[in-house]
Structures are given as structure tokens and as C-alpha cells.
Length: 491
Image 1 (tube, rainbow, N blue to C red):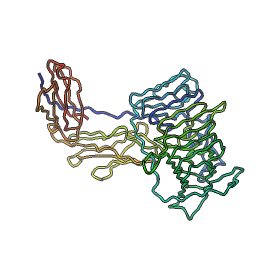
Image 2: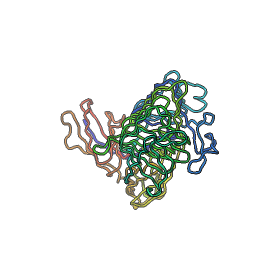
Image 3: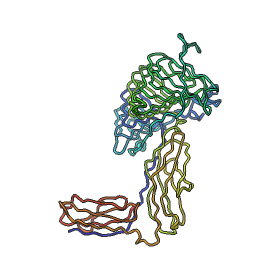
Image 4: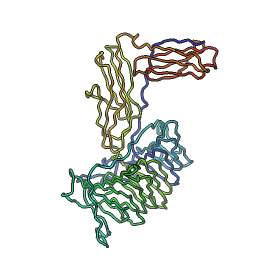
């Protein structure tokens, strides 16, 4: 026996709170810390209280701080949208976050938590310092659509700058600047030493980079900065990065995706033993590995996003919280569709994950509306009071940071004057066929409806929730002597 029932009801679903800082070390497919002496922590180069303040060092004529473990913070976040973070014996001052249903594996010496937890050598993950809802996406890096000027290589023997021989030198050139920015290109694989002596310089490495053991192969001088795009792999030898000012935002490296006929793509980045990296690295298509290390730890400061991450040996990773604004935004809970009685108050909510500072707002019929943002939860909300029929329609929100802009899916607000306007219609035009039962549901188009089933009219289970209108095929109907169905509108 099969019966159909209609029921009106609602269930409010609030996106889970973020409750954690964003940024640090993100590997889309997975993280594997294989070394035995790995430390991950954080600091803030823009805050004298959270860094060793440098009164004699400048970046764009402003002082900043460098890392010191006496002023470290515990806001580093190791993230994967995949299933596993192998913490091993690493000490992580901060958080470990996986994709839905993922896990963080620890060995006996592994520790994840705040300053007191990890600093005291407490093993395991401190409560509240792990989550498994990282359903995030990361856009590909994109090459700026500009005309690139070939960067000339210096004559044989190079030039001596500060006691080091360089074969490529990027200096200020007002004649070549486009809107204040220098755009240079090196077509062949970069294998010789390079120094940047200016600000607002962008370098395109069409064939990637490969260094051996040169201690100063790629240098960013004091008060200068360089952004690099690479369309091929990177092999970093020992000690290849010498960021003189030790300021991570001064060096940004973007790995381009594989695009046939355009780019080979950056699919692999390798750091050799004792290599040092101080900068921001964004290469969502690249496998990243750190290899080697001895009694003295190799120091990495800044932030990185890659496809997958493996760390062998002795490394210290220091996330610079000043780089959080460069982390890409992602929407992990789309705005909630809902129905509201005319004259009532409504709050639309969604949730984002990404670096601040943010610019955000809701849109309704191309009109901008003010939004509220809770930095701790990541929830973006819009409050509407005394809604009327004219307020019905699709709402979406747009949010931007220094990296990217994302727009949510539209969320339908349905305003009703009679509750019967929400009642769905269920029907079956075939009955039971080949042991399957077909149902059609039609309610308010764009709203979510739930179908529940029961065998005794007392115990009901949720069978399906989808956006109206939709079809449902019950393939288990032959398992029951009788089955009843009811449906209702749900948030």
C-alpha cells in the first residue's frame, strides 16, 4: 500500500561557524609531514606585538616586523579539501582542517593547538583545533593580459652587486612602466641569478625556473618587491631565495595551470635541502615538496597554496598573518532559500572562507543592499524587516578581497500571504513499476521541499530534500508491506 500526504513545515539550517583564522598552508589534495622536526606557527609582520619590529628595515617606506619565536602566534592553519592531513610528529601552533569526512593523523609526538598546548608538549589535537568541512575551491592563477618586455641577460661575467654576481637585474625603468608596473618576461628556463632592485615589478617565466646550489640565485632587495608568474615547473636548489628584507609580501609566486597550446603549466615545485623561502606562493595545480634539512632547520615564512604537499626533513614554517588578505575567497555555504509571511522579518545568511580585508554586499534586482559580516563565523547576512510582496525574488551576495571576487548562487525569497501558497503537490503517474515507485513534487519553484516516508504513520524518515519541482524514484518500495509519503517546504 502506498499513500501520499501533504504537510507544511520548516527547518532552519545555519551554516557551521568558521571560528578559526584563515591562512597558512593549504594543499588541495592532501598534506604529508614526513619529517621528525617540523614546526608550524604564525606571526604578524604588520603588528609590533606579534613580531620582532624592525626599526631600521622598510618596505615601501614603512616599518615591519620579522619572525621570532618569542612573539609567535598560534593562528597557522594547515588545510586540505581532501581527506587526510598526516601531521606525523609535527608541532602545529594553530589548526588542521580537512575536507568533509577527512581525518588528521598524528604520531606520538604530534601536537596541534594553541601556544600553551603545543608549547608544553601536549600530544594530540586540542579540542576546537580541527574541523572537516573544507568544501572549498581555489581559482587558477591567471597571467595578466599585458605586453611583456624581454628581460635582457647581462654580458658574460654578469655584474657584482653587494658582493654577489647577478646575470639578470630588474631596475626601475619609468619608460617601460604600464600604470606604474614593470612587466618583464624570460622565455628560456631561468637558471642564472637574478636580483630585483625596484618596486611594482612583475616577471613572467615562460619556461619555469631551475637552480642548483647558488646561495643568492633569486634576490629581492630591501624596500623592493617582485611578483612572478611561472608557466612551467620550479626546481629550487639549496638556499636559492634570498629575500633580503625578510618580508613575505614582497615576493609573490603564482604557478599557472596547464592550458594546451598556451602553457605547459606549473605542476611541480621542489625545494632542496637547506632552501629558504620567504614569500607568498600560489600554485593550485602544483605538487610541492620540501626535501632535506639537517641539525639546523630550514626557515620558511609566508604562506602557500598548492595541489598537494610533502615535507621531508627539518623545517620551520611561519605563516605571516599579514598575507591573509591575499588568500582566495570561497563560499562554503550558499545563501539560504526561504519563504516568509508578509509583514515578518527575514535574515538571509551564507558563509565564506578567505582572507580579510573584505568588500561585500548583497544584490537584489541589481540594487546593492548593506550586509553584515561576522569575522569569527564567516557568516554574511542580510536582515530584512516587514517584508512585502515587492521584496520577493532572488538575492545574492558579492564579496571581494585582494585576491579575487566571488558571487553566490541566487537565493529565492518567497513572500506569501496565505500559508496554503506553500503547500506542495505530489503525484504518481505510474504507480509501482519493476519494483520502483515514481513520485513528482511541485511546490514553489526554487524553494526546497522534503519528502518523508513511513510504514506506520508514526515513525517518519527523511527520504529526499531537493529544490522544487523535482522527481523522486523510490527503489526500495518492495521491501515494505506498505509505505506512506508526505512532503513539506523546508529551509
